[in-house]
Amino acid sequence: MEQTAKIDTPDYGPFGKPLFDDPDARALSRVGVVDVGSNSVRMVIFDGAARSPAYFYNEKVMCELGAGLSETGRLNPKGRVRALAALQRFQHLAKDLGLPALHAVATAAVREAEDGPDFCEEVMTKTGLTINVVDGREEARLSAQGVLLGWPGAYGLICDIGGSSVELAEIGGGEVGRRMTSPLGPLKLRDIKGGRRARKAHIKTTLEEMRDQMGPQRDRLFLVGGSWRAFARLDMLRRGYPLNVLHEYRMTHKQVRETIKFIEKNDPEKLRSQAGVSSSRMALIPYAMDVLARLIRTFKPKDIAISSYGIREGLLYQQMSQNLRDRDPLIEASRFAEAKDARLPGFGKHLFDFVMPLFRSAPPQKVRLIKAACLLHDVSWRAHPDYRAEVCFETVTRANMSGLKHSERVFIGLALQHRYRNKREGNRFTQLYELLDEQGQKQAEILGKAMRFGAMLWMQSDAAMGKLRYFPKKRELELILPKAATPLYNEVAVARFNSLANALKSECRVIMRG
Image (cartoon, rainbow, N blue to C red; front, side):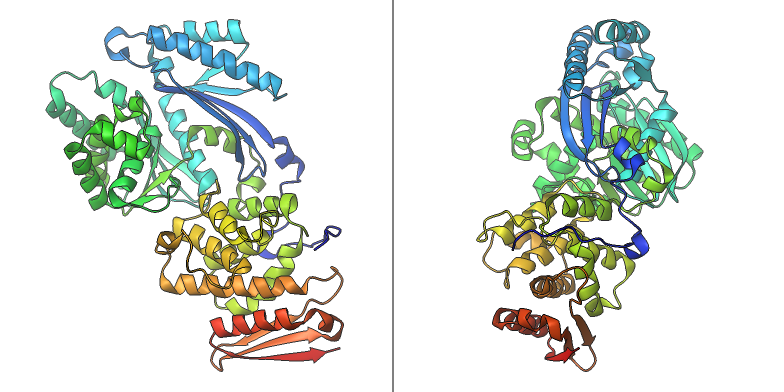
């Protein structure tokens, strides 16, 4: 189809107008942040829809600034040299990209080391970069804000593990509550004398003291930090989990215990290679898993989720207006993708209105997935027709999008697959379908076939598109079609309408009006 002028769409129902063109959002369209941690130094440049940004650039150097800090009280000399070199490179890249000033923070190692101020001064002298050294409670707050960027309305306990420290923070109602810091980072635990028994005793005492001050925390436990992500990769390996996306990955208490046993019984180098974990990160896993085991025994959370978002995303979240924070990151990212890549930007709203009669009883959480699918229904049109359905599915299930459980990724992906292909059998994604229950798979098929049919009724924005009426108890599906749209209802459209009716197990009829 030839590209036409952009459709002028009004307010998008309960989600309001898109915000990625708002001045506040444009001001955040490309933001660079640097995290000088105890274990690594990383620069991330965020770009795109400000409420759900893409990672334009992401580079990490494992410096181990905090190695040996417990014994010497100073930064690791070799790590300091590597960190300075990394920061010089990051600052140079930022200038070449025309970024505004980088936002840099340093955490436990720099704030605790006696030569931390000297290091910050050296960085300023040699790079012009100002490092903001945050205390433990502020570090916890920033990490919690990062989780809120990915999970609007999330509630529970955040546990951010760094090289030298572990931070806890509670969140609820979009706010960060009580927060604490502790010296339970792997680099600190590695220096404890007395072996694993002494280490476990220290962890137990520290976490029980934190529990007494934090109070009951029986909701979700959000795990933030590279060591937790590495542990999750090993859990995925043990379980044979089909979707290699860490954000929103869930684990139970039992699965954590089984993965700890799995790690203890197998060769670390072999596990590292199979799971795609770096050797430096794998070396810290034994310490991190001891913390995790005691953490879940102490706080007894109802479930456990991995967050890929942490302190760096928290720095971005901090710069957002409340209006921007309140938006749904999934919907904003989907709108941004439609505006950037669809042949007919704005048609997603019309398609949403067209298919919604089939989902009148859908809860709000399902409605937002339907909305996102309609916005994304045409963004992969440049892919080869033979592979378009697969490209849609793979893009959504593996996209860097927040506000999505893994089952919800599969739901949207499956709907988009049916948007371009009537059947889903015989492809390489069969294992992923198992992450979505049978009813969800059926609903995704119905949505995809409805979008597949509705996309054939494209007309000018001021013309009536046609309406669906669905009577589930009677098993009847009606298409009310304006007379002006009759030429669009050809044999291909008839076949797609019949396919939709078959998916609904309903009789279908067409009513011409006007």
